[in-house]
Image (cartoon, rainbow, N blue to C red; front, top):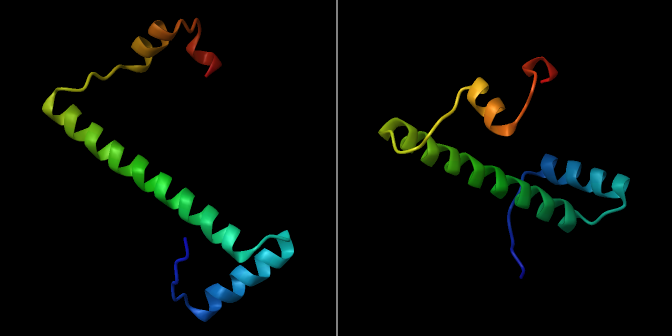
Length: 79
């Protein structure tokens, strides 16, 4: 798929410089950046939904001690 976007000139210059330095295409840099941004946004919105469930009391939470016991950790000092 092709997508056209307008970016500031200074950003395009930086993109070009890094692409040349890394011997990658500008497209590959933009695709990677977009993928990472969208993953971060998905994580952010998932965290908001979990926070809402915690506030409603429908999401179980654990203390560090409880979690370490569940996971079978022997000594919290190792963290």
